[in-house]
Length: 424
Ligand code: GDP
Image 1 (spheres, rainbow, N blue to C red):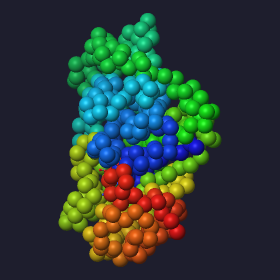
Image 2 (image 1 turned 60 degrees about the vertical axis):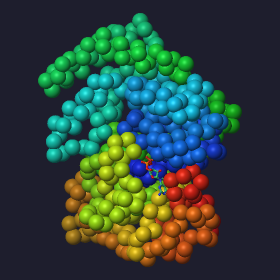
Image 3 (image 1 turned 45 degrees about the vertical axis):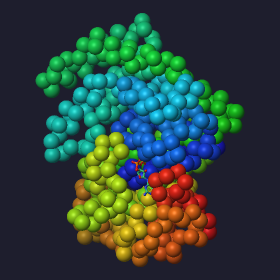
Image 4 (image 1 turned 30 degrees about the vertical axis):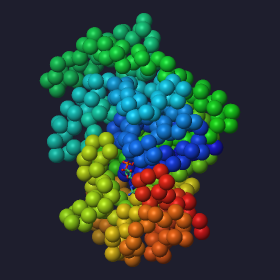
């Protein structure tokens, strides 16, 4: 079984939590895009963890975790994550962590350039986490980047860096910054790269063997549809493809082999950073929802923008992900609401719109709301569909009809066991 677990919305839907839960049925978990620019939060018997790079299967002894070819990897940050897990009693070894030899390395100057670009944008900031992700992907597509395998091909490493830094220093000088030397970059690559050797593998070969042997593989996405580089709210997107369609490329398996896509959809909306966010709440309503949902960035601590469930964006999200089923998360958070607002359509320049608009139309869109009855009780202890109040079930049905997919899993709390498998 090959399953992709992906975000339907703007990210932060609770993918980490769902991968941690669902990975019990999987032998391998692969991250296939992104870097350490977002955090996946996992709460289980071992404690609360925020993972930026390492797949959320790391807490299961039986799981092999792969950093796929489609990722950009800050190897200094990776060691920090490995050491933190070690310090808390979780073993990360070459047996349970494999790093694609073809993944791109995020170098220190990528972080510097990310900050310089974001600062230069001033008012028009794109919401970068300043961790070098966009500059590293830009260099990948410009074919002026280092890959993990380059660390170990010592005869040519210096020469490759000389060529790349020749270009990078033009840019850094343009910003009025000191150029980067080959020596300092080599020293950094040596320090954080050399000890990775036992973890590095041809992960597509490894995956092919695992799949041939009948192993179950999960593909863990970072962020969600609306942050996808091609189909999200460009330019306020991430720099990689968050869609399930990219999983085979970013992991290195044939595209036709994915069996199932599970879309993670949050019971309300949240968004970090800049860009259009049609359903954004303000004032007291926003404060209440943000507090109830603990909506502060996992990687950055930034308060997240929050709003009602957005049927327009989520329908688009489900469709673009090709989600077969949904996991509805953070449903317990809505229990304080007397009535639950749902955005059923947008209005753009006086016209009702139900498909997700682009560019200026999206900027101009205003939400059209309907209000469903609140359920006004604590559902966080519910473990069966029958235990849910009617108003809660009605909300679920409403969402299913609006987005065109069924909810298979419902999450009613952050802990691994706080969930319901929906029966009808
Ligand atoms: P991800 O990036 O998609 O993995 O999501 P985040 O880790 O950024 O955000 C999810 C946050 O919500 C984390 O703090 C989780 O512990 C928490 N969480 C996940 N599912 C639930 C849920 O069903 N209810 C509640 N109350 N919290 C949840």
